Amino acid sequence: MDARDVALLERAVELAERGRRHVSPNPLVGAVVSRDGQVLGEGWHAELGGPHAEVQAIAACGEQDLTGATIHVSLEPCCHQGRTPPCTDAILAAGLARVVVASDDPSTKASGRGLGILRDEGVQVASAPADSPVGLRARRQNQPFRKHARTGLPWVMMKTATSLDGRLATHSGDSRWISSGPSRDLAHQWRAEVDAVVVGIGTALADDPQLTARVPGVARQPRRVVFDSEARLPLDGRLVASIDEAPVTLITSRAASRSATEALTASGVEVVVVSGQNEHSRVRSALAELGQRDVTSLMLEGGSHLAGAFFDAGEIDELRLFVAPLLLGGRQAPGLIGGEGVERIADAARPVELTRQAVGDDLLTIARLKEW
Ligand code: AOF
Ligand code: ZN
Image 1: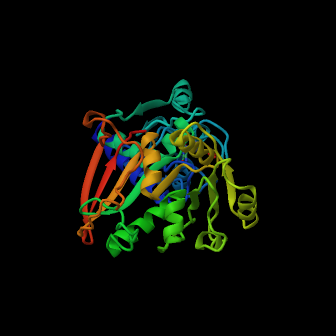
Image 2: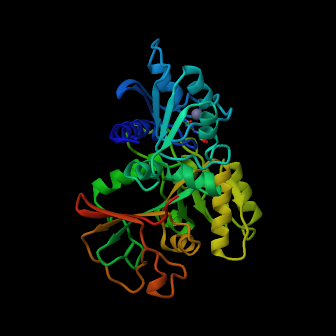
Image 3: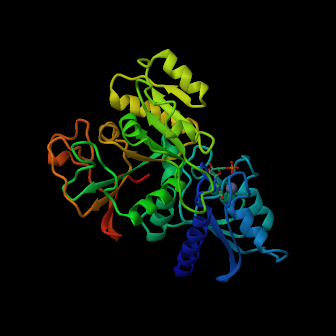
């Protein structure tokens, strides 16, 4: 790998971004076909069920003879017949002599098999080192896909807004609005990028939220998920009223009354009963249920109680926190994360990466807690 390879891999990662909002549960993938550093064609995975990045990049080269050319891909090429044929076949058919990838594909049907097949066929294969900047960038781009492929669970991003003194709401429960308009716009964009938006029943009852992404360019609305062990979600609330805009899933328990769950089902709500010894094992079961429904990413929006259960389960992968310039005080005012919490400072969850930026009047901190 030389500097030219790195530059072409960077380009592939950049092209992959164009698929965001369109390809889940598939990964974002970009590819560049070149010869002697000269780009012949570029491609990206643009929609679920559509051609993969490699096939698009090869097609973009038109009638040119690609024998002996190189392809740079942000993810290792697949070798399975899925919604589309294997990319390894397309690469071999085009006569490409060299394949350079920025990241591995951790799914069981991949995990190096595509690269192995290519090598066996005499193609030169190279991978960016896992700790190189472009390798890291490529993996970070696909955290939801990677976690889902490795664990079957969705990647969890917790989004929240607090006052300077760390409160989510006043002691009376008023929380509208703590963060500034630009912060709320950004949060709507994030809703458009995840497969599901999740709240606890406390938040659903207090705010009667719609949980849809209200920004331009939404390819698909996220599934709305409510953790509601007693099935108290009101039939006349805004979530049920907007069921034609996006599905609603209720995560409940055997404690819920039959008549309540039946009425919700009749209104179009999908009711999922999970069990478990304690709150965090129920969180994991719920995540597994969502993962089976191809939810690879979710945005956890509140409140403190549900965030606590996710935190105690070790299932918060990233925190995006807006801190707004106001103070609320109050012993009863809820903080960010409830639950049991950790015992000692030494047990604290610490980010693998931390970024901070101003958004409107607020300070946005993004803390990535896990690396998949
Ligand atoms: C690639 N290039 O552009 C993508 C890949 O259902 P399919 O046929 O679209 O296959 C999806 C799987 O293929 C997905 O789970 C991942 O392992 C891989 N995605 N591979 O070579 C691509 N999108
Ligand atoms: Zn493929």
